[in-house]
Amino acid sequence: MSFKVGIMRSIMEKYGKLPLISGVLVLMNVVVFLLCLLTGDRLYVMGRVSVFETIMNKEFSRLLWAMFLHGDVNHLFNNMLILSFLGEIIEKEIGHIPYLLIYLLSGVGGNLSSLLFKMISDDWSVSIGASGAVFGLDGVLLALVLFAGREIPTVTPVRVVLMIVLSLYNGFAGMNIDNAAHVGGLITGFVLGAVLCVIQRRMREENKE
Image (cartoon, one colour):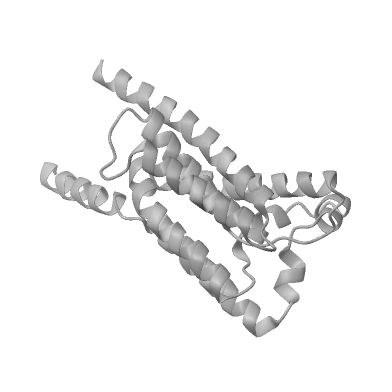
């Protein structure tokens, strides 16, 4: 019996380190993009975020679905490249379920921030994309290097801050970029990541006792 338990534990530890959720998220985004190519504007109209459709029509599910929609191949590729890179680092550090929850909540937080900015600025444009969720991963990574209490190979606070600054700069320097979603997702990911780090550190300390 102990031999079987040892094997199961070894298998769980092996696959627990793989970025499985990141892979599933990338696959889902690619599949949705291909469906969008086949169905025209239908999925975009159903899932995009705007003040009128989301707030006035109370279609709040758009806050979630919009993060799986991308306007073109470059938009999709850039987000999925960063998602894959950060996911490989973060998912094994915090676990599959916390990673998924923070990713989704960061995307929702980014879309809420976008809507708030649109309402303040009387902007009736629409937004789509996983950028808010991806910036949330930037925030999580920053929280990890500051509060996790353990070192992550090749990742330092200076490098993470530099990456975030460059990403934000590219957004503000570009055209038709929803920077409010970027900032909102970044803040959401950082706050949730910091809370998770505190909880996990306390759990580790209690287990040592």
